[in-house]
Length: 367
Image (cartoon, rainbow, N blue to C red; front, side, top):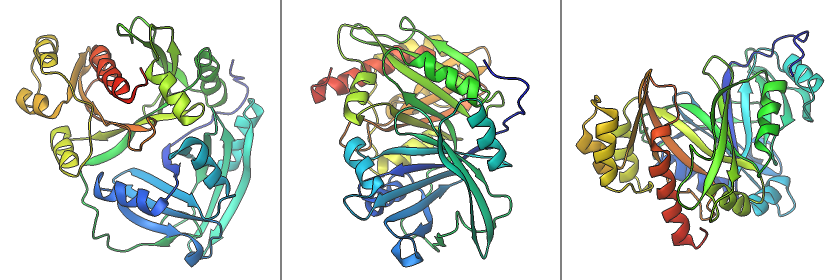
């Protein structure tokens, strides 16, 4: 339970998502050419940073940082060796990083980085971080007194000749996978430490196919700025996608990021043209979906041609599509989502989605 005598822990939203990868230069090029992100800053030996190299990628309110180690024994290199390219830090913007860290630790969080002040000619940034599931961390970033491009040690990058924005605008939600029996523990972590509440709960009857199942709890900050679903595998006849992820990633971690767009048809058309592969959807899905969902602003022919899923709830409808994993290990992938009032997560699409994922698992020999 939350100790309500403690002060509130206000989180303003996502600050940045940092990936630890095997080759940051190549990962940055992929997100530039395929997802339309622009490189806005760089840190590495040329800027006085030793041991690693980082590229900051921006598209509207989405900020990615891709980092790789420059020696075999660097902690980033070891992380990439174990997990493959993966998300290390889901960082939150705060007004007071020291206070946020203190409150989180008092509530039982394990410290990773004590409050640290970083300064340069552009001002100062205060950062601190705590541990969450697996090797993932959450940083608290206070940057109101900083006018630089990202953090001290980074230099701004000018024109990017590769990047062509595809219409992505914000991080909608961040999904974590944990081992069987661990979902309630980590849902409790977000409730107790960060003051989140449960927005949705899906059990194995909601998210299942003939072969596999999972359970999920969606935690949020109560304002819609931060949403953090937590998944665990449920018993099934064959291996679930969560078990495949946990095996390939080497433990718990962030499974996928959902990125918002205001024009999913245009975004997906451009991403497909850029070489991004999405999970295929059988044509018969659209007969059922059209009857279930009814009228939408988009063309049903366009949605079917692109493989975009549709769901409706009492507040409106949403459109969503899922990429294949973006590296050879079947781990991190992306959801592209457009909301027309709906605050849901596409419950009506679960079966179609998970059957599509299982077809890909079967192709890999992992079902």
